[in-house]
Image 1: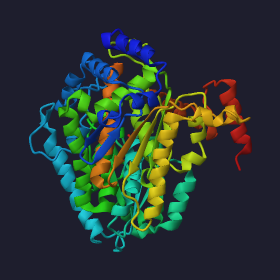
Image 2: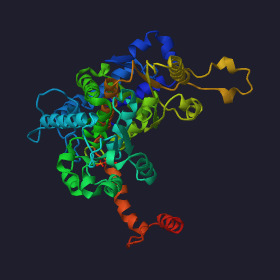
Image 3: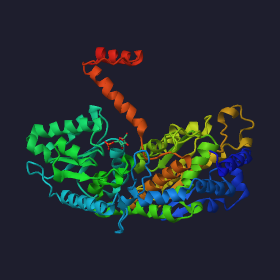
Length: 530
Ligand code: F6P
């Protein structure tokens, strides 16, 4: 990357090679104050990163040289920032309660967004009040949400995270994969007469979702007949024609639009299970939390801008310290699925090398995102973070408030989280191991960077802000790396190959010649299926 700031950051990296993060704390007792930021209820502590004031200034300069501000404005204004597909990217509009119009292709999309929200509200209130009856006149008790990728990860993660806010007897189930085991267990648990199935698919052509949808339709038909079954099917899609063809009734279709990317669709009608579970007031608080983060992102100066700083710190670690993975470790069981959610958000958005002006970028882009909840990880993968040969930056995420009945648990949970970030930074005290024959085995080098994000409680508003924080982080990185964060052409190749392989598994081989590995595996499957 030929930018002046980029060269300067390489120089600053060299200057810091001999400096430990813990030395930076010794040099400046106010380091936490200087390298932490609070917005609304969210605290971002990035003081345990290997950064100095000069590094932060240069990173901000890098963002300026990449014309980040102009790109942010383009995003919010509805310009076609998804340039390979010629689409606007307007998840921010989905959570904007303001009435001011936003024109895209001569259409005020804010009006569409608000009428979709009204549709969600009407449906949610009727179902939660027990007034939505199934084909045989029974009250709905279970919601089965089908979808994969962005059509599943958002709502399933949020429903788990906000389970404390559940204010209904409705049970919400999610099925994404086409391993029939999950669907079979749902069919055992639920009654077709009292279950509604929401089929979430932006394209309504995703084979996994359609395969599951057909199985659910057959399950309904076996008890309710064809006419009864359709009353239990709800479609959430940007392709209503295809949903109608599948047999969904027009009045059961919730629309969204091609300006909502799959991995950003939790803010659209794909969020319907969330509204059903927590009710409209809390659902609107969730949207509001994200909107507040949007406002902060678009207005705060880069040096005080939480998503901008989080994105730039990621670039500092990936491109200048060669960290190829990033761990996300929530000390909050509610956020158990958050690492999976961020995996799609970050890796599907920025796992690319095609440059804006054709050709390929020559620098590293998205790291591998992985993680899992603490304390569990301390007894599993944290060993590698402390003593392994790779440096893996961590985002620790935790709530100041725990479960009301388990205060002592929570103090131990928080102490564990803070201990991990401190231990990663400080490592072993060398003199304490000097005489130990197992010195090398026990020695932890420390000097491993982390951020900590803390909030008073995981409320709908906080969760909305937290998700938006990471969405904008990803956007910032995509702009600086010079890639399109909003397409996903890489996923298409696998989809195409499924179509070539499937007939061979179904006993209808075509003329396609496979490599010997793929053919060997097809043969083994055919011989060994029971
Ligand atoms: O995996 C590719 C992808 O297109 C994701 O971006 C998307 O979230 C997922 O598939 C599901 O797609 P759809 O909502 O169209 O079924």
